Amino acid sequence: MMRPKILSLVPRAAGAYRTMSTTTKLTTVEVNDKTGIATLTMNRPPVNGLNLDLLRDLRQSIAEIEGNKSRGLILTSSNPTIFSAGLDIMEMYKPDKERVRAFWTALQDAWLALYGSSVPTAAAINGHSPAGGCLLATSCEYRVMLPKFTIGLNETKLGIVAPMWFMSSFLSVLPRREAERALNQGRMFTTDEALQIGLVDEAASSKEEALEKCAQFIGTFAKVNPIARALTKQQFRSAELEQLESERAQDLEKFLFFINQPAVQKGLGIYLESLKKKAKN
Image (tube, rainbow, N blue to C red; front, side, top):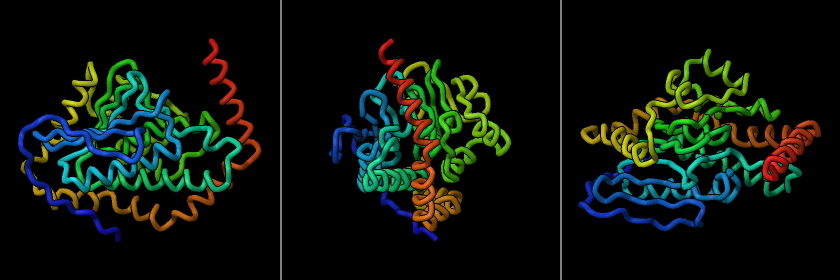
């Protein structure tokens, strides 16, 4: 069984937001000294594509947040219309053998860190959130989404099969029947649709309001023993976390085999060409 990381959480004095150091500028972490809540912002233009560097930075930032005794983590984006566009296709199209191994390993690490985090987590979804963006959002315990955006695991439309641990995050939020249908269809949900089925918990009219609602959710644990809360959360999530931990090597090999299939590479190439055409228009 995985041993949960238990933090000694202490109250902070009132004060301004404090920016923590990060390994790169692809994420920033600001801690509110009054609430003790950390806001982790993805900042990889143009669309927060999850490449090797951003995934490593996310993992490092989550570790820093847990290590500095923050009371909670809010994940959001610096982009006003994109939360995260998902996995960076360039990491998988005609991939370098060593880099693509490191890329998938970094994705595993980031998911294990976020889904298994001992602190309360919430996502302020301030833009579109397809595929890997939805994975990050559903790995958090609470989601607040702005209007007129979409969210979902749409891998099947790209000819990609979502691994079981992607499905685990989805199933932790949605009923099995709803999750299975959405995954098979590669369906993207509007904010209203996501709210209706429970894919997101609340809607907000602005990023500031979304951040505040996420902070209010984290604040509901103020009178709960943090060690008991962390252990309870990780017991709920232990089966999924332990499954990936024990099958990491096999999961990597499955990904490498799949991504190197000629039909998959052809599909990724067609998708990249469509993106280039859209960019020109």
